[in-house]
Length: 338
Image (cartoon, rainbow, N blue to C red):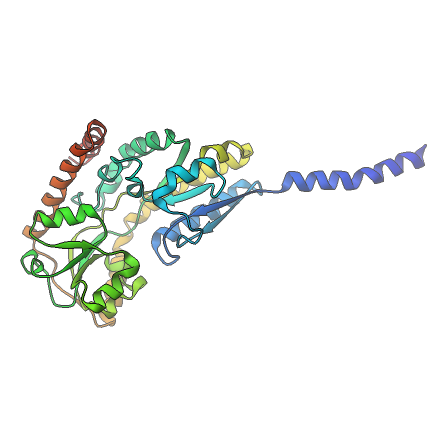
C-alpha cells in the first residue's frame, strides 16, 4: 500500500509543477508610445513600465515599444486600443485624438498657460475631462505624465528675438493651433513634423522653428540653427497612460492593482519633476553654447504677452467651434488658472 501511495505521489509531482508553471506565467502586454528613447516622456513611460512590472510580482509583463515601432498610429487609438489585441496599453497626447473627439485639442492647447507650473493647477480638471472621454470608449486612464520641460524657444538661422522680425521669416510649428495663433500676430507659420525639421531648416524650407531648447540635441537642431531665443512656457498638456478596459478586466487582481498603483505613482513622480525642469534648461543652455549656438535675450515682455493673448484668443474660438462640450472644458480649465 505504501509503495502504491509513493507511486501516486511521484506521478502527481509533474502535474503540480506544470500547474504551478501555468499559474505563474505573467500576462504579456505591449505598450505603444511615439517618442524616441532619449525624450523625457519616453523615460517616464519606461519608469512606469518598470514600476508596474515590479508591483505585479510576476503576474504581468509589459514590454514598451517606443518610436511608434509597432506601427500603431495615435490618431487611431480610440479604434485600436479598446479590443486589447494589437496593444493593451499606450502613452499618448490626447490632442492626437481630435479626429474622433473634436473637442480634445481645445481642452488645453500648448502655449495658453502663463507659467509652466500652471500645468499642475489644471490637472484635477484635466483628469476628470480625460477619464470621461476614455470611459466612453472602454478605455481606462491610469495616470498623467507631466513633461519636465518648462520653456519653448524660437530657433533661427539669423539672430531673431522679436515678433516684428519673425514676420519676415518662414516659421515652423508642430500644430494647427500654433499656425492660427501666430497668424493673429502677422507671422506666417507652417507645420513641419519633428522628424523632417532638420532637413527643412537645412534646405531653407523654413528659416525658424518653435522647439524646446531641451529637445534640440535629439534632432541635432543646433547644427542648422545657431540662434535661439525664449518665447513662451512649454506648458504642454500632460500625456495619458491608457489601457484597454477589456484587457484590464482579463488581468488577475494583483496585476490590476499593480498597474493602477504604477499609474498613480508616475502621476506624482512626473508632477514633482516639473520643478526640476530648470536644471534641464541650464544643462541644455550649456550644451548649446558649447555647440556654438548663441542664446539671445528672450523675446520682450510685450511680445510674450502678445503671444499669450493670441493663443488664448484662438483657444476660446476653438472651444466655441466644437460646441457645448468644448466650452464646458474650456471653462473648467480656465477656472483653475485665474
